[in-house]
Image (cartoon, rainbow, N blue to C red; front, top):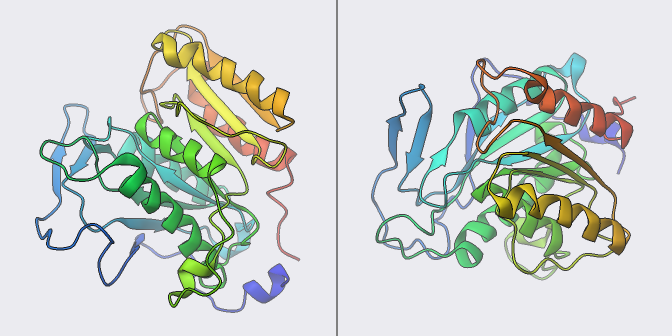
Length: 282
């Protein structure tokens, strides 16, 4: 399949982002859960989401004239208790769409919210895998290349991105749901001050990684991410690491962000180009 074929259906940039539910008939493990999502506004203006039972993607597509075919699924952080969806999601997805990259902000189920029956590996991680499969099966609709779909995660969301980058599968070819037949392997992974899983099987097949954190973050991240970088290199995987001096946890992308760290998204975009993910369709 060529990218030219993928461009046929024209669901391209819209005035407002659209929302796609991952499981229209209900997410496995969420049966009987009918509570509405909760959204609070943090003092800095961030929208903070909780009580997620219908995992979904908010879709930001680039203008056709600037589309590169690359796509990123973004998982905001929040300690698996809530989702800080603006500075670790929508702000970045919008920026990417303005630079030719489709952005998909993931609302995933929260394993550590009060009284939650969900788990990270049993529900939140499958939400991320389902998102990769769904975007891949709808690549023509979104005008993206199914071979250039990556994942990005922040803090707790970074854990999901790291799991997606190391525990992927080729899909279930006999599944009744066509989405389940698609591969869950991302083309690349972006881990931004991530919660690093204890077990990460690394090999030369591990998708290339772009790693970002602050020097003043807690030790398991500020030292753990460089250690992960070295482990990836020893395993034969490709990785690029950025550790920003004088920066702590949770910087994401805000208008108020200053200094070199404010350019980390631009550095990521440059990395995509270096890796060949920004080849415009012919």
